[in-house]
Length: 540
Image 1 (cartoon, helix red, strand yellow):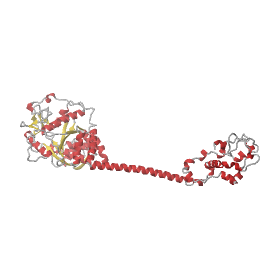
Image 2 (image 1 turned 45 degrees about the horizontal axis):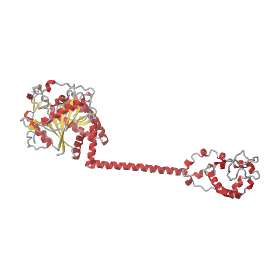
Image 3 (image 1 turned 90 degrees about the vertical axis):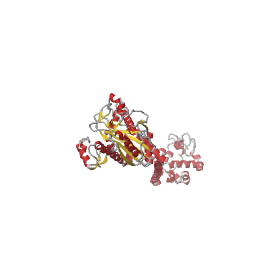
């Protein structure tokens, strides 16, 4: 039945005449069993019919503002003695036309429309909020809340399952990365890329002043005993025999050095060869005394700590100076000691302080003499930090740098001069490694990234991957130390100095004919040669 069936009465028509002979009492209709059948409403189960009543009847007054407005009082609509109009066009709820006479219809005439009327009654009663009481909706909110709770539990369970799945993948990846060679290689390659990308990002100095060259010194003379700077690794020893620079599959050697840039100087007072040996699973650190007198390719002989500055002359940027100076220093050591070097890394003193401070300082044990000396001199450049004491000290970057520079006082254990100084360098490196490896797992990469920014290197990503894989796969954690020149193989020129053909070099350590003996000791240490095995002028 359409809306017009229900609302099709027109008060202006003569609808009252239809019922003027017999008044209809609504109370009688409600008591009449037949009428009850017409408007019989099936019992409603709120749990089934209104499963989500809060949504359907969120505001019953909004949908049925005034039920009496839509269904005007039936007594007023059907019991007006003054009305004489019929129904408006169309059909009313009883199925009568507008021109029909009410007397012509009996109760039986409505039987065929009983179902339709019943349906309409049900529709009216179904959505009429007045037909329902609060008791009809008891428990509906609880049902709705229970459903929401079930949805939350279902959603929470899904998140939990996803989380467990992700955790399982992480564990599987970790087991693969740590427990298998391919996994470790993959992890190391990622670390190598990280190191390569972050190394040297803070080394350029916008205020860098290029080092000027001395044209007279650049031109070597045969009388000066210079070894020409050639790319061919073959060199001639003192006997005039051609020898090869030595390398072995089980050893990789790298050059590390620190640059002291004070008052325009650029000396390398810390020079260290780090060799990774996979045969005896050790890391061997060889310190080269800074005053060692060496042949410099393309220059007159001089102290080894001056080599870097000669190579860096003419460079226009810090990076270019590091690269040119490091390459000349690397070539000098290779030709002087006949050992292959696979790469280099360097740091200046100021950035070295930054690295130690980023680690939070390191622990160093001081002797009584050196502690007193550090507090009274300017080796610790900041007077505020001249407060060290004998025994173990937790030192910051400025204090560690001062400690590394001391050479006129013996260190703990009795070593003095350059011997004591190189020993301090090795102790500091070991302390830095220990401090870094003892850091929390979450701190390792941030610390490494920040420290790498102060280090400049020519190591490729592949070279980094190789050496780190060698260390990890062979569990190389033991370090050993050596100093070159070894005791008894050199003489100190003192103030008198030695003439290099260009100038007089004072206070330098001259090996002279003891060079071969130092090379033998170096090979025994790095390559594990037997003590009775001769170097044979470098040819093995």
